[in-house]
Length: 345
Image (cartoon, rainbow, N blue to C red; front, side):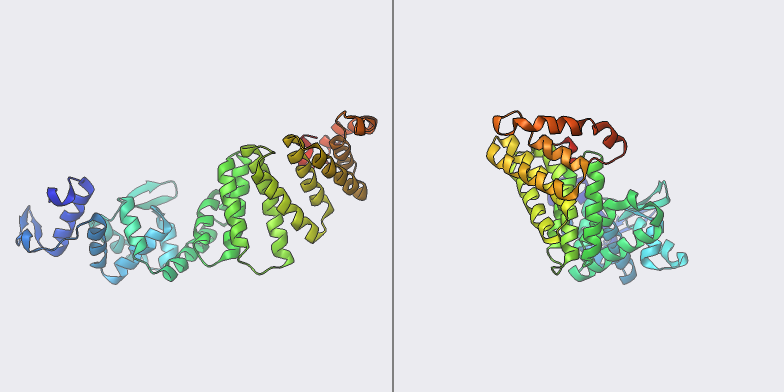
């Protein structure tokens, strides 16, 4: 056994459990060998041992273990009940059998009782034993169970919801929750997480039919992505330019002047900080035209500021900037300044 397992403790435990399952070992006060171990054909890997043990379970027990593997490493009892639709009189003995077989163990949790896989590899093997279509169906059911159980506290479970729906065929829900997780990560300055989730949402969005609604959803995601990228990479990074450029294309499709100004001002910042003053000025000029079309004083102030660095061609704009800057505290207090007020100009 030591030679087969290489001394790996978990592998040894699983082989021993497998021998009990096969009847090669019997526990009756003391452990007894019932037949020669040389007669047994044991898989050469711990994954193989686990797969063989799972296959020996009754159908209902195997189905329950596979369902737990989709829920995750830890499965609250309330969620298991929601998933299995099994009366407690049948569910509790089934979970007790899986505990006795040492696939899972029980522990106290804030919400009551939860069941935890003894080892991550056990969960992995049980999960991989599911057909892909069955996995997708179970992931969607887990997402629906989370929504049902935690309807008033969804913000506390966005990561799980995004995970399960993104592994299902429900693209709308996957995009929604990935976007919300990304926004949540952005609020706590977890910029890498925000970029990962928002990018995943944008990628999934491309699988939906082209429509104004899809364009609007992508624009919202791109506008959420740009501050995360600028925080992590800086305004001059190519990734930031690509995100702003894509957002600009989407704005032009929708004809949305306020959001178009945000994007144009962002592109001004990209080129200005790269030292490409000609392109920076071109986008600053576009900002001015867009601001003048809206008659919004906060946008006009930002447009004048973008045009305002004291270089000879634009030196005359400082007076206009000064007049508008007098209103700056008033605009802040009244919440009229757009997010790009902090951008360099």
